[in-house]
Image (cartoon, rainbow, N blue to C red; front, top):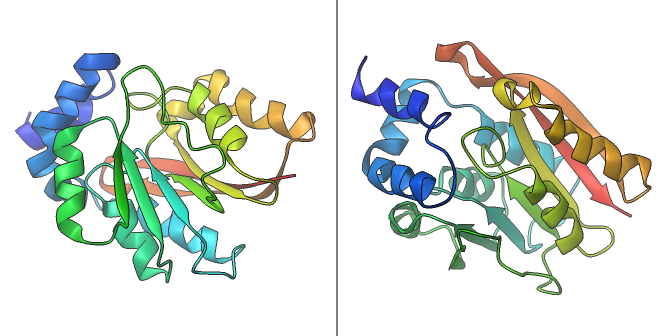
Length: 206
């Protein structure tokens, strides 16, 4: 198994907390190349999905678990001009900073996402960021609670993640409770070289 493939596979078994942070720190230098080698499609898919429902490209966007900034690059290419990012990995944030697409980059704690309630974000994105080997399902609740009424949450859940009902239960529960409307739910390519797909949701908070 190549080191590139090892990093991708290991993320699903490394565990959470400090172990996951360490894994992403040591992966940061090669992350972009590893994802490109597997034809990573999700950032572009999510950015395009947000454009279909958000006409104001100047709206402040929080890119949750932004990693090395591939998601921020996609959002900027789609026309969004005010993008902040947050991530638990200092190594990933260093790579993201070098891309020059973020207004602010905020370190996230190991135990919980940052408190951004009232920060004025009109959209929060979690692009390849919530799921097995990444942020927990509870971060879906956090994102929806952090948005002001009318704000949008774009989240991708890959095939591995969709096998765990807890993630979809958060989405369907918020919908059933009248907290959000599902504007879009599109299944499509995630890492085509691995035969892996993801469902991209656009949720609007009532």
